[in-house]
Image 1 (cartoon, rainbow, N blue to C red):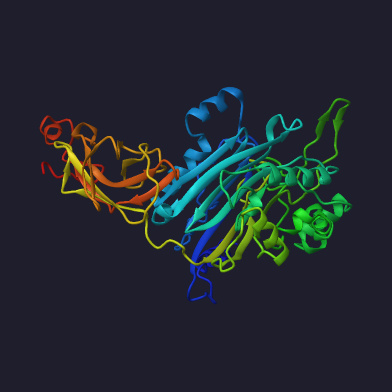
Image 2: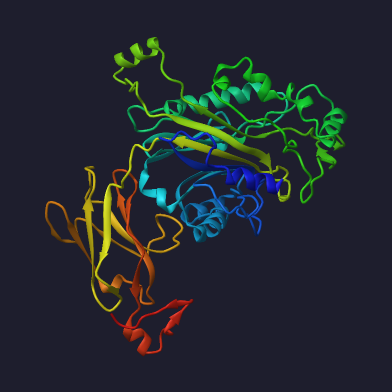
Length: 482
């Protein structure tokens, strides 16, 4: 299975690629972690053994431990799961672009650094469906963004459990789609986006078939005999909201319910108010990844859109999606659910070929001297007094992982029609030096819109002479002085 997945990841560049389109790899993970702490290693989960890795990682977790004290601390600091994924992906050139958490629901979006200046208009939101909409143990969290000018939305859901609530799950899903809104004219709702990925513990079960038949089908790997009674498959035949979404073939074992720390389906005796109950949960594909490409508007739709001043362009650039792989990861046993992963190839025409801002470190930088940043605007955009430029160590984990920052307006020292210069105090530079980059953060767009080439900040001469720092720190060749 590992070899097959590696081959899929290596084939992100589609064989019949349109010469005018660029190809990108998108890797989606969904996992109900059942309040467990993260494992020591997620390399297999993220398929890091492949020599060619995806451009984007989208990771949706459900039932992240949300005890009151822990949840409050997680709001102030990144939770243990976020830390694990950031620590794993940052050394490989990925940064966390956005995240959102609602109690046990967590959604993370990572990108290779090269694409970050072209990921714009980032917004997040959530919908509670637990306790009639008052509690966030169930519901959905979403991240929407523009990727090279194409509007994408990622929705992580955890829906109502138990066999007899299939219709309620559909109602909850429809409510999430209807109520989540964004501050945008043409993409104010989830289904307005060109591409929507919906995934999570959707909790649909396998109807009618008995335990013995289901387990025999799993043992013999005849999963196709179970498809017709999969509740999500059945509901798609009659529910319009589900017909809008596609899904790959369920050619893998049902992902629920397993005994902890094993690959054995539910064998535990259940405790009830009336004593012990030997009834076990039937296996089911609770954990799913769906996607939808927005269809082209019909003539009637266009008339309505014109009336509402939301007319779409008829020549909107194309975007294609191919699912390269869809499977579970049986080797992870800390939860009663198995994680599910999907590898997708995205083909699209870039609507942006250059970043909004070009910036660089002026001259050599040393912690003994004040420094200067030079930047220019490559395209017009609405800047703000709250825009800032951050100094980051190469391999940084997220937007907030800066060493220091400077306000582009308050700390500006020179400008003309094309170039701007911003001052950085030597007191804010890292005493130990290191390899760094500069990032321009737009407050209005809520994203990084320009990244410099890597450059070296030399360590402080005084610190080395006083013996505070060795001349070689963590393998970096520390040049003393400038």
